[in-house]
Image 1 (cartoon, rainbow, N blue to C red):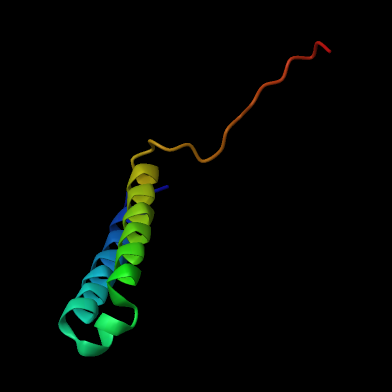
Image 2 (cartoon, rainbow, N blue to C red):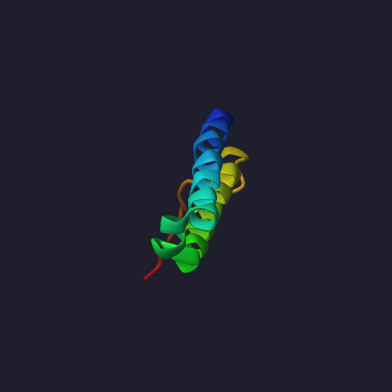
Amino acid sequence: MPKWVAWFGGAITVPTWLWITYRTFFTDVGRTDPGVGGWAVLTVVIAVVLAVLILMAARKLPAHLIIEENGDP
């Protein structure tokens, strides 16, 4: 995966997380819907997605695994 994909993913996920954080902690509606629990779950999901994008762009995660099997029964 090219490195620009990680940069583009970060450019999308970081402002999204900031907007969710603002809505959760600084608005009355955000405290009840999705609440702090929902914010925590979304924070974990966004962090995992961003970490996977960064690791794939740095070529630290394999795109697929090749398993060689022996021809012997």
